[in-house]
Image: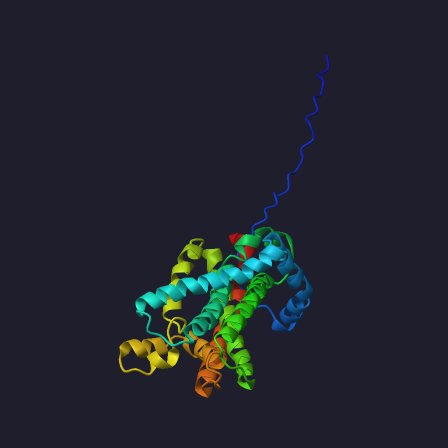
Length: 293
């Protein structure tokens, strides 16, 4: 009687299972020689993304554009009533123009911070599913803030003309003052966008910072009448980076005088310093955004 040989099933040698581990890359800053041209190559994408965002918010139709003009005017009236109550009606005849000039510029600055802060979190799908310089997203929000700022200049022009204030060649000095605010806000906006990725409650804290910063800036008060007074308070107001920028802006547009050259230099220093630090912080951490989202 022969025994049947039972054949055991073939043994398969299982190879090691593959594991994909996503780690945060902290290895420095990307090469600017390739990063900057790649960012510049996305300029059409930035413009189209800004248009699509404004279109989704109804800012490109007639009623949306009308609201862009009415809203800043109503906001200026609210602050004018507040300032009128606090000062018992004792202010210059051109105070409303001064208030609008500073308020519109500061609103542009605060919009850069708030919109840039949510640029990465609000575009998480784009960050995860596309390969592009992440700096594109806050730059788009800065462009949107600028488009919203332009109609406020129409409001200021009308009020300025109705009050009988003068214009001159000096008005061109407002351009460097505006650029300083824009560059300074962009640098801080890049930092805010980075912080928002790591600290999700940062967006709830930011409005209180911008509101306090508003009252410390020469919007509801004149820069020259406050910072040159003796005392610790005047010295602290003078340390505000926005004081020389908004002060120069107001001197040019409201009083039709050339800005203080020291203010322009000081504002340029703050703007360039904040921009360089903001860009460095953002691009150094942008490789981690996909992991943090």
